[in-house]
Length: 526
Image 1 (spheres, one colour):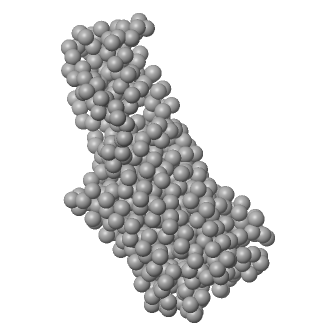
Image 2 (tube, rainbow, N blue to C red; image 1 turned 120 degrees about the vertical axis):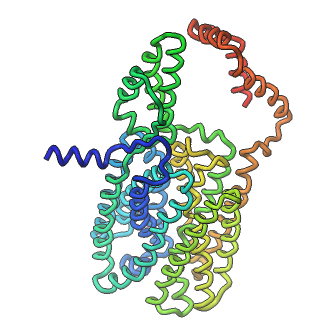
Image 3 (cartoon, rainbow, N blue to C red; image 1 turned 180 degrees about the vertical axis):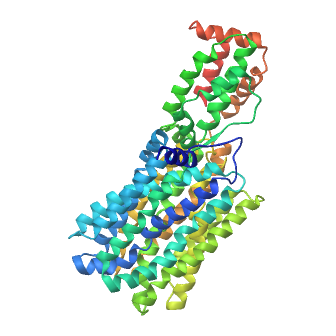
């Protein structure tokens, strides 16, 4: 038994590489992400097939029933910082496994509810929290296993959502007609238990560059606690910095014949462990704020179309069984959209954020097209276009945080929770806003107006991300006067070591040299 546990720990333990592998165990993580996508967003976007049954059984309106998905999406996204903190503290594996348990528990409990208010608790809060703890850590660790192939692999793995919509919409519709919506919820919740196994496959990754360490370096390198190696997974830079900073401090100690790195290292580890849990300094960066505003408004168009397209098709005279295939049409187009955007972004000749901007702009036009078409085939064309563009956007808007135009891979684990949390408010307001428009106008096409408006505003803010990153949005008159100061600081990096050592001695004695004062001045000015 002990031998079996030892082998299992070795298989599912930390994976150490000399550089980002662009493969290896990352392929197993990609399969896990594929399954997680199926049972998170795939289930959320097929919930529209239960809309009519819930309205009939509980005697509720469109807006009241749509609050179920709204609360679920809000909890899923608003608790994203909690997911980041727990992942960075306990590791990805236990957090995702616990999230899978909550997800399954909430869905199965829905079968025993007797009112919409109870479904707000089961699906909205319990399942929504499970979605958050399952999805976000998985997409984060997948981005760390790949660098050059990140766009393609993420796009391919994210097609799990599309395959789920394609398969689940007709399958669950037929199952619902045969055994009822309550027993169908039990089946869905049981299938969602697969994500617990997926969580066990999310092995931490640690980057340890190839070196020829001395005997002293070997002792210090291998004396790193296991928690430090596991923590390197959850924060984008902790795994790299823990080894690199160790080597730099060791070399510095060897040059001066001192053993002080052994005393400084625990403080560095303590600081890293504190900073890696949650960092809100990303809110000070203009590029991140603009990108977060894009995510906030664009989210309005992510869920309402899937929620109302079946009823919109039925209102145009299509049989309800055939109307369910509208979701499947979206799903097929979405698969091609995800694969196409992965190939384009991996091509590397076009800046990725500009490609995303074009897709978001076209999406707003397609959402307006839903409000003017008539007939089955016109709606089918809209579903194809919407699915293709949704695949482009959905598979790239979170991994785009890893690009230098926004935050970068080093700070992505710290920024992704804050970004998704900001999105949560639009996820909460989107479906009910569409439901209110439907109740007022008695037309399901009216729900697409709010989606189009939100996506259009998202395109505007997305267009401001690149100028904010490069500093072109800076309108202060003293921006130009700050540049010589920054250059002077850069030049000071080449000063003689004796001068640098003098500054270090001043710092240790509690004094501040002119170089330290200059550095603080630049920091305050920026």
